[in-house]
Structures are given as structure tokens and as C-alpha cells.
View 1 (cartoon, rainbow, N blue to C red):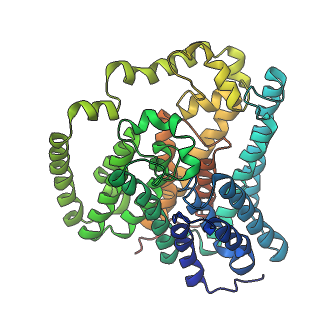
View 2: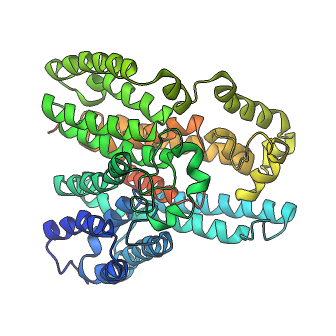
Length: 454
């Protein structure tokens, strides 16, 4: 196991093939894939972080259940770290461990507060300690992401970009099929179909579940491949146009307001973010404006307003949630936090149940402060500072800077949405893998900023 038994190009090609096969609704395929996933650490340990990262495009698949995917993710993270630290005796630098220990202490602190206030087990039957343990497993993705990129000074190779984007396209295919054939048992993974009633409020207005549980989750994980592809195609009008077309397909099928706003922002900022030539971004900007006007005229305004939640009573709901949170957090809560776990917010928002059942204030800073107090906010701001620093160091090399830029865009989205940074959600895996990759791009002492590259 000192090195991969499978050549790296073939190993990377396995990644999208794995997810494409998982999209096949045939009995027995899931267990065959599970067996293949189990032997991957023996055959190609170096691609395990890539498998974890791309797995976040899927809550479940037609062939594999969410439970099986949860187990494989944890197994791949543990196997990669064991291979790296035990078998290869590799060294992970101190700043990575400091981050792991810091977040572990934060989760322990929040769990302690929740246990003292609410008891060990929540009303839903999930122990606070279990939620914290799951969240910590996903935090270990930070070490995997760092170790994956650090030997190459934070650079993603083209084969890895291709594997990421191809796997994403498999997930996008779920949404396209649902748009063409409808949202039903034949087009939605079985695990998601069991939860579809909770999703019906979105599906009824044209927002598709893809292979994720929510349209918002699919939109969030799509930011990374979109940014990567824009970086690669920045000198090509055709490549940039195709990338934006794919991005807009996701936007139209998820109808996530924050995602659509960020995609438009990327077009406007394409020059400073990716050093794109004028002959590429100017025609695209004109085409986007024309396409937007034509699209708005073609879509039923009433349905569009409903889908994007533009009505006064709905659009004011989030402001009501924030106002309620600010008014009802006590001074002690601001200082120490209310505690970690889904049940904390469910109880906090209980008086608003008739309006909407809530388990988040739908703003990352409020969520962090509410759970962990000012210490949590300090950690959150430190994450922002670290990612900004990684982006500024690599801004002249768009494909490399795409890692940090994607993290920043995800965090920008979470200023107005439910946060998954400190949570047991599978999307937390996505964040921590990306954050570890951004850490790998930070300069050594005295290292200059990168030169512009291809």
C-alpha cells in the first residue's frame, strides 16, 4: 500500500465511472459498488479524498442508499489518513492539527452546554454526542484535503478537475431527467423519495431534488465545479459559454436565489477573478442580458415569483427569523452559546412553529453565535480570514485560486442561508475537504504570491 496499484490516470477515471454506475437503478449494483468502494484503499489510496469530495454531489443514488454512502465517506477518510500517517509515516503540518483540535473543542463545548440544558438525548432521539461525533468525522476531511494537495503546493491536476466535473455532471443528470420525465419513483433515488413529502413544498414550484435531498444543497456544491471550469476555460468563448450554460441549468432546476446571484456575480467579476480576455467576457455579458430578458418573458411571472419566493409575505419570512433570533438570544447566549445540535434550534424556534418549522436561523454568523457564542464567532472569522489569504496568494492562477474562491462563495451564500460548516450534515464534508485544500495552498514562510499560469 505504499503506492497505488492502479496508475493514477486510471484511478481518477474510476471516480466518475463509480458515480455513473451508481445512477443505474438495477438491483445488486449498489452492493457491488460498496464492495468496490471497500477495496479502493488497497488499490488506489491517493484518490480517496477525491471520492469523498465527489460523493457530496449525492445524498443518495439509484443504486446506493444514503446510509451506505455515509459509511463509505467515513471509511474513505479514515483509510486515507491511516494510509498517510501509519503506512507512509507522512507528516501533516501543525496548523492543520490546530484547526482540527480547535473545531473539536468547539463541538465538545457546544455538546456540553446542550447536555446541561436539554439532556443527552433530543426529542428526535438523536444523542448530542452522536451528532458531535459525526460532525467531527467530517472535520477530519480537513486533513485529507490538505494532504491530498500539499505535495503539489496546492495544485489540482487536470485529470482531477475532469473527475470532479464529470461526477458533478452525473448529479446534474438527475435534475435534467426529473425535468423531462417528472419527479417520481423512477427518477428520484429511493432514499430521497421516502423524504419527498418534506421536499414537496419546493418540488411543487419546480425545484428538483436531483440526487440531493434539497435543491439548495445541490446549488451549493455546484459552485466548485463551476468555478473550476470557468478558470480552465477563461480564454475560450465556447468553453466559458458551455460552463455558464451548465451553471444556469442547475440554477433553473434548483431555483436557488443565492446561487443564481452568485453565478451572475461570477460573470460580472470574471475579469478580476479569472483574468478573462475581453473577447470572452464582453460577448458573454451581452448574451446573458439578452437571454435573461428572453427567459423572463417566456416564463409565467406568477410561477417565477412563487418559485423564487418573491412575494412580500414569503420574502419577509427570513427577515422575521433573523429579527426573532436577535431579540430572543439572551446575553448569556451571545457570550457562551445555547449549545450544539439540531434540537437546540428546534426548541428555540418552537413559538414560530405555526409559521414554519425551523432548525436554523438561516444565517451562518447567527447560527455560529447561537450555538457556540463569541468563541464560535471568532473561529468562524478566522476561517474567513484564512480562506481570503489563500485566495489572495493564488489569485493570479485561476484554477488554483478556484478552491479558495469556491469556499468564499459557499460562505457568502451561507450569510443568508442555513449553515453546514459546524453540523453533522454530509455537506459539512464538502466544506472541510475544500477548506483543507485551501490550507494546502497557503504559502510557506517567505513564499511569494504565485505567478500567472495556464
